[in-house]
Length: 291
Ligand SMILES: [Fe+2]
Image (cartoon, rainbow, N blue to C red; front, side):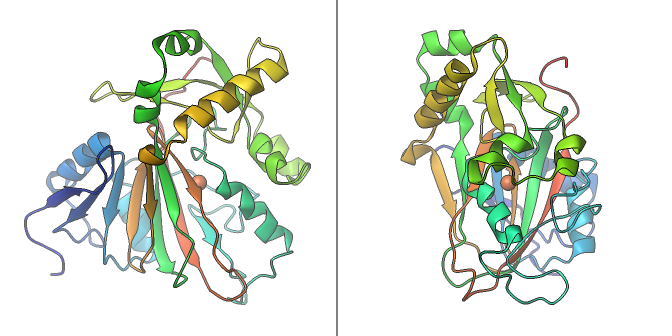
């Protein structure tokens, strides 16, 4: 058996993130084997597993250990499946999609810091991304510790935002790329939802700032004032020392906690290189606020 031995969890950044080794996650895991992985997830927020050659079936099997999977909306090429496809390759031909194609322009929203599915009434627990084909350079995924971001806020600002509710929508993040880019069908599927500006981890109680590109404004505030507050919070959160940048190798698997980190994609040459990543998203169990 590959990759077996004592499970090892090694921190990769002073604030968050860990590499987990000594386990083969492409095979079925017992509850006893999964327990320490789940505990490491609650503690470190981002888990990296190397040399795990995933296919779709194995990825679903591993992902379901964290909980039921979300299905994908009509705005992704993998609509109706359990996968969010992150790729510059045409799903039918396998060849690179031209950069001016709407499918590529649409993906640019991933360059903004966001929390996957914060635009859903019950936002997601975590996402799992597996590297199937990687460019030799670029295409990193970056993570931002929102626990560190929360802790760094002045207490008066923490008190100000504690009772506030933000409205999130997929439309808000897509409009940042190009106004009106989202189809009427996709908009109708996902009406705006309300979210608190923080999330507490139910296991260890650690609080994280909860914002990101899907957050549009503050409920009950003038729109411009709410946007200004969200902008200020995002600027305060985006400190280099709160960031973790991952350069992908084929066979890498990363699990990140959407309650505790924001993430973003970074540039790669989509004409020259091929990139194919598969994401599964595990649903959360509770809304952050009554709707
Ligand atoms: Fe994402």
